[in-house]
Amino acid sequence: MTLFGGVEAGGTKFVCIIASKPDDIRAETRFPTTTPAETLGRVIDFFQRNSRRYPISALGISCFGPVDLDTSSPTYGYITTTPKPGWAQTDILHRLSDALKTPAILDTDVNGAALGEYRWGAGQGADPCLYLTIGTGIGGGGIVNGKPIHGLVHPEMGHMRLPHDWQADPFPGWCPYHGDCFEGLAAGPALEKRWGRRGETLPKDHPAWELEARYIALAVSNLVVAFSPRKIILGGGVMANQQLFTRVREEVVRLLNGYVQSPAILEHVDEYIVPPGLGARSGVLGAIALAEQLVLRE
Image 1 (cartoon, rainbow, N blue to C red):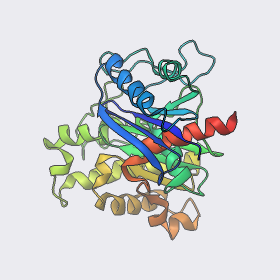
Image 2 (cartoon, one colour):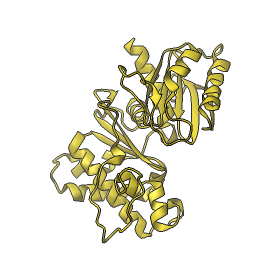
Image 3 (tube, one colour):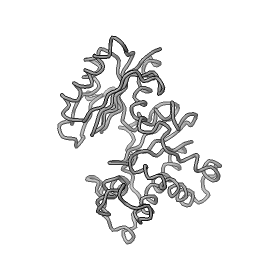
């Protein structure tokens, strides 16, 4: 059985696994994100300690960003302008690949999660499919023709602009770049700053949830008409509130207003807008899927 290494590199914690697929995880560890030297040192130590028993054929990295994915760029494989203290301009790809002496591939955390869900989770058989994480921030990843979307940089779905009814919602947003973009209006910190309480402490009948569902549905509706995905997967801490799925589905159908004539939306929207099939492991298993694609490509 070919084994791969996977790293989910998050701004709060790192998760490392050695696996061939979701039901064949041979080793796993997680630890807080501190300095680049300490954190990447712990990644290297994990794989080196397990290398004799579980040798890996390639390493996949699903990483917080922004990251440089342009293979012709001198900073390819770097975390670039992140506000995470100490991590800007960190060459994460080559530092790990060189230390472990193994081929490695880097993508965004949400592209990794999208690929994991496409390979083994809720996105199986759905091409194209999109994955949105709605938590501390908002990010989106897309799979088209079986591969993550790249372009000028990488998708930044969390920063799309949404209609903002200032009378209904006078909150200015919290995004340092755009104020009231999708992330600025609907990420976890926006909930807390608008209502003075963390989202998980708000009761189910609180008006926050109707507003939250509205913003998520506006974004999802934009993505439906822009990408025509066969599946939209919504993950992240905010979506742990399961009642949001019903509200978002109903609002998406209302917003599209019959324009997209597909039974997936008109009759089966509860199977179209769904939670992750891999749960909290979407990102790290997506890193395994990235490594698998790298080996197959070579």
